[in-house]
Image 1 (cartoon, rainbow, N blue to C red):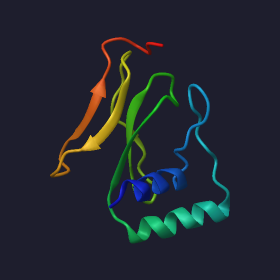
Image 2: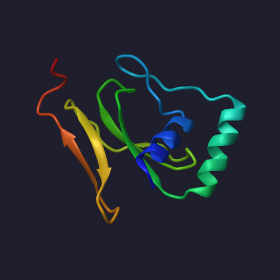
Image 3: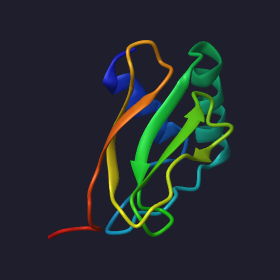
Image 4: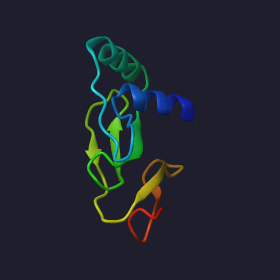
Length: 101
């Protein structure tokens, strides 16, 4: 699956963020139906980083937008997540400190 498709799926799932700190995007019924239609065709898991809960942590979800789970919680910044080639692990970058401007 291409990165563009994964990004599109993440956006359809309401995971887009805006501004510093980020925020969850509420989907209308039409967008939710589109998300579920795409998710039904593409099975898998999406991993992304977000500061939606204060710190920049990692989250995963099914391609249909269900089962959203936070997988890291720390005072550090976790970002640039990628699945390992066999899909069994998530590789990512972790800062030793919080945000450094």
